[in-house]
Image (cartoon, rainbow, N blue to C red):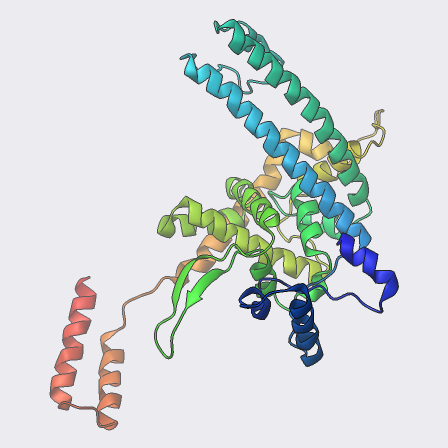
Length: 378
């Protein structure tokens, strides 16, 4: 992108090619800058140059912020794992508190019997963790400020399991949703589509997901899928149905793909999530405003997040989501495959006999009857 900005004032338009799809350059036996430039010019003149979409300045800035936040979060996770490894190496039991790095957890950590060098390492890790926490708060503030007036981000927040970090990361990766003509295009852009291998008229073999595309956005979708699978609603029902067949890991990836399709429909149609919980959405919006640095509202007037703090009202919204989950389960119950009836097999046998297939009609009918009996027994 830096090279593109340097060249933009001197040319009419800068075209950036996808290197994964320019096979003529990647597999060339004689590869120099002059030959590669000629190949690119020839492909562009013929209309065969695979061009990528160039984001605008705002989208590019959001991508940088989201990428830096992702790096800080990963660094914090590594530091926490190092502290846990030190405790595990000295056979110290698990912390009785929910979080090892909050106030109560740190008090418990300071009382554990570890050598002096390990104590110094833990102190150094905790100090680095606090510094990274300050950097993370600054990044969250910048992201929240940019997302306050972003209508697509506020729309994605209506999905259960999607927070500000996920919504901002998805919109930074998507950019202009109009460049995706179908939800399958967006799924492929995130690398959540399965690999397909087929030769001629043979059967198509589906493998694992391609993982080609925006890896950070794919990771954010999977994290949102795990959160959506824990909350009542149609997405949880979908997760349970896939988990019963393929396991929880594949079910989480399937929910992530479902979320990508859902995001495409919501952004293209300009609609919010149908099964959104109003109090939860209001709580997300208010948390985004506070993260952006807006002042707190004090007084006796109830705010938009009042219902989220009342257990009864919050429970009523969850009951609506649970009814939506039951409706989805009832809707997909008829999708289960059933063995074919005996009459259908007999009719198929008669149709095959009319087309002159090899073998007598009685033998074919007996074979089909045997298959029906075996299917019914199974």
